[in-house]
Image (tube, rainbow, N blue to C red):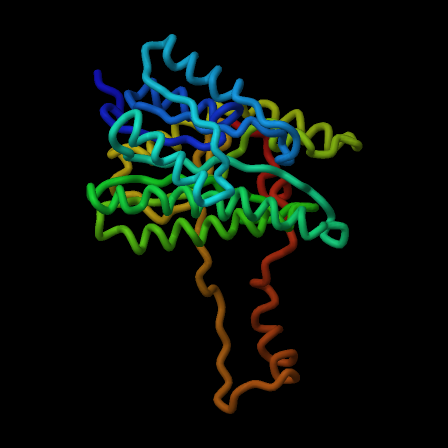
Length: 305
């Protein structure tokens, strides 16, 4: 039986390790020709790059009878991002799907976060998703088909300590995806986000100083990166033709659909408002609906199933 991506060409960024690797391999298994993009840098984006991770994934795909090519360009520069998409066109003559998965981490408590810490994370995650998506967009428009899958995070959707830069980037990706979905729906182009729960080197920096932190990490380790791939490949495929502009999550064997920001409570005053009347009347009416300062682990507090 033909796979759900039979005949399609897919770009997966950050595909040399972890979640990206799993998605590239499953995409090929489902019939896609895959551009395996990975710069081969460290988790924080520093250090010398290596072609080995991407090449190893390509070799694994080819040994299993699939078609793939390695690409080592950075997503964080527009010209390099264009080369990633061009790699698909040069090798496979078309492009049908993009998974924006590449990312780095530079976790810092906010008052210690440098401009460079903020800028580099935004550049790789948010600008990287924009650059690669923009490079593919005109091709999707001309062929009147295509799908984007972007990676967000509960660090942005809910919150986490020491990740203001990462949270800002990941929430920006949500807005980017929604905008793409609205602008390109007339061309039969879809765009969705996944918030992944999986153990990978990207979250290997989680503190393990207390018993509670150690227990949390052990729970996360049960969620292997390959659990994310089925949802991503589904969203790329025509099986998901009615799904666009959505935020989903994959947590071991659980799949979640996230709500999106809408008004939940309103108050009205015929004569308008003053700071004092807001404190006296608006705040008490809204207090029970204020969003608590939870972290991701507070909301998803149970063991993955």
